[in-house]
Image 1 (spheres, rainbow, N blue to C red):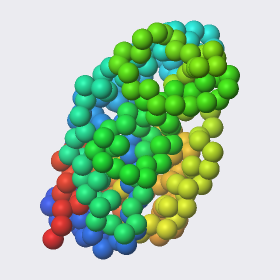
Image 2: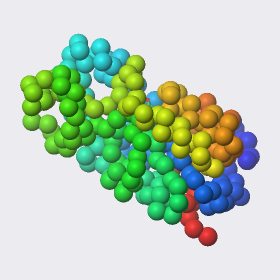
Image 3: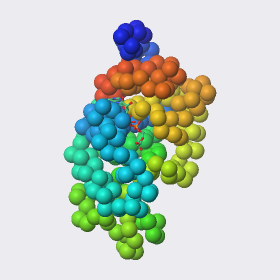
Image 4: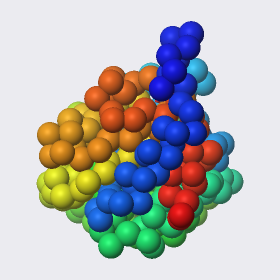
Length: 252
Ligand code: APR
């Protein structure tokens, strides 16, 4: 790769090498972050116009924030649900569906809660950080889908009368039971890990990259910016997932 002006550039040969790795791998895992939905018009968290530049995560994405002011937290999720409802999956999401259909063994692990992978047609998605289209009761622990936009009443309540919360993982909370073990198992068995549109700053999701390397898999990163895992990648492609993923999964 040519190192120009501090940004790694890639040429067609590098993309072709990455495509060959994907093509010849019996088992592939993709780890996605907010960046894969950026081209669908959904803001990321830490980019130049990221959500965490406008809002303080500790005020909106923690159990303490919700306990302090459930209505404020729900107003933010209501706004995000309305924004996401207007968005469509993009070519990056669709390329991962093609890969799923072509590979004997493909696992999609996502940090995203927007549901765009589901709408694109992905199946068997490990949603490490939950799903913005599901609610969970803070009293009886029931959880259920609710795609109404807008929700008729904020904050919503469960049939049991308990206060309902978004069924997402907030900072400081554990991931859904057993899901990260499943993600680690898939990464250990893969020959290629695609790391797409994530700043690789949040754990344990980011730990899947060194795990893939230790397991001998090729790591291919797709991100317009350099990240803390770029140097660990076998190939770090500086570009948008909507452009690059279709090229990586293109058949011969
Ligand atoms: N294609 C690929 N990557 C992109 C694109 C694009 N079109 N646009 C932006 N990116 C990259 C950015 O360069 C950045 O590295 O996507 C990444 C988005 O990073 P974050 O906003 O930090 O999102 P993410 O990595 O998913 O955050 C992880 O943090 O706030 C919590 O729970 C939240 O799941 C989230 C977690």
